[in-house]
Image: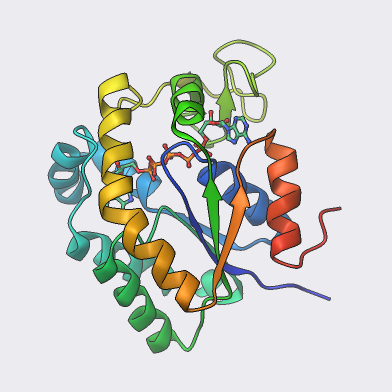
Length: 222
Ligand code: AP5
């Protein structure tokens, strides 16, 4: 029997949103929409959106709700998202959460669950300082917790691994503050009251966290 997942993955920077979203995508073929990845691509391409977004991203600030909702509208309406989606890093504000509801209503879809990955601040710094990402396929690694077999080279596609420019000490601190003041206070309460929030302990290795996420969603881990 095929299973459809329609989830939001929420949590502070470095909580493992991208890592867990990839597990869900691989297992269920759901479309994985990461607003951070889309924005980084736009910055790389030097598109008008990328040029606008860059000034916020490099300071760890949020990009405007209108730009984000426009991007999401384009991506969520793609055919393959009808059969399941994992939203990674979106929504982050009240207007984005309400905008998502409107988008889904127009598409005749609804959200099943919001997975809230909770980890303490000191773990965030350790995870982000060691993160490396494949520039070709986007696979995530960590220098200590999940290293590639050959340093600097992706195991999957042999692409080059790079360090994100916003993973500096100052920008990590700014992103965490933004999360604590602009994202967490509204989002956690809103989805808890709506009965959609599943809080998950994000500590432990990625497979242990995956086990908790799948269990919370009522999905088979094997
Ligand atoms: P975005 O790219 O979404 O960054 P973020 O929210 O700060 O989250 P990260 O991608 O840093 O972390 P993650 O939780 O995905 O962790 P990961 O799985 O990589 O956004 C970047 C910027 O874009 C924002 O600052 C903002 O400017 C803008 N933006 C994006 N969305 C926006 C929106 N909706 N509205 C407005 N602006 C927006 O894991 C991190 C590391 O830890 C990796 O190395 C991984 O291998 C490792 N790891 C993962 N899980 C574990 C584990 N269980 N144990 C040990 N290590 C682990």
